[in-house]
Length: 361
Ligand code: SF4
Image (cartoon, rainbow, N blue to C red; front, side):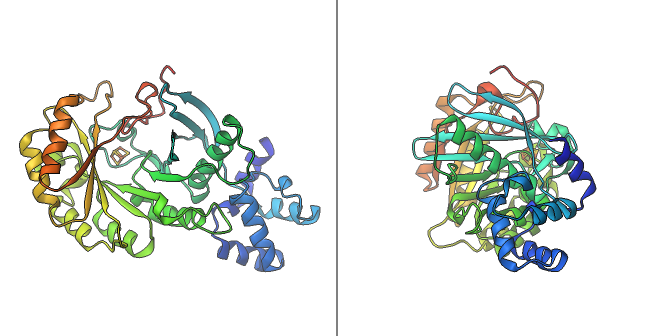
């Protein structure tokens, strides 16, 4: 590992952050190689999850040496793993410069989902969220985003005795640490790698990106990617939303929903609205009625998430019975709503709890 870390510092090109086209240009222009080599290396990196050039055994020793001299492979290292009683596993990864990010693996009978981080910390400062208390340390690179998926694929294969080389993860949600659209260029590159047929080849239907509502970026996201959109809404009026989500002071609910109405939805898709239920903050009958009105003309589904307690932040979870009343009110107003199963609460892996803090497993 030591040589890899030295290589990270001394070689400027991170080839695991390059889409295939850019990798092809690098191989042909800088190393004088044939274009097919790029595809070979891309497959090593993003289908097999190789983290060292030595693993690429069908490349000549000479080429591997020249690659190691001219480039490095951006990786993240597993630093900590915590297992929940419900099967959820929280992984903490360390970047080459010692920063920590978390990814949450959520297996269920019909899918294996990973919640992925896009930034170290977060600048959005949502007052109910543990990550928000960290502030933004830095953006993750495309390779650091993609490496979370490669690492967890490897872990799942080992833990579940999967011998197939196909990726076990089936679904990705970008709802971990950070605001994905605040790191849009790196997110976009990571998505293009993750969806590439010579890479992990995820379908656009199986990837969801969640945003607090960076309105201009929602438009770009709709034009420049093809994956699914989720909005972290969490309030039915501007006063409340601005209190708990400062982003609302810049782009209010009307501006956000206007961007949603203009979003180029693929046929059969809806926008997911996440609504974290906090007792006495946003869970009243009046909130439900306002939410019905707000979403009336948007193809929407609402995921109701009972707040996960973060000591010191001052918010409390809505009771189960209140959550059900809230869901019914939305359903009566013809808004599809689901109470989402809360996963990984006991290891602080649930929504809004990712803050690099160890908790008992
Ligand atoms: S909820 Fe999301 S956007 Fe808000 S502070 Fe937490 S990580 Fe950042």
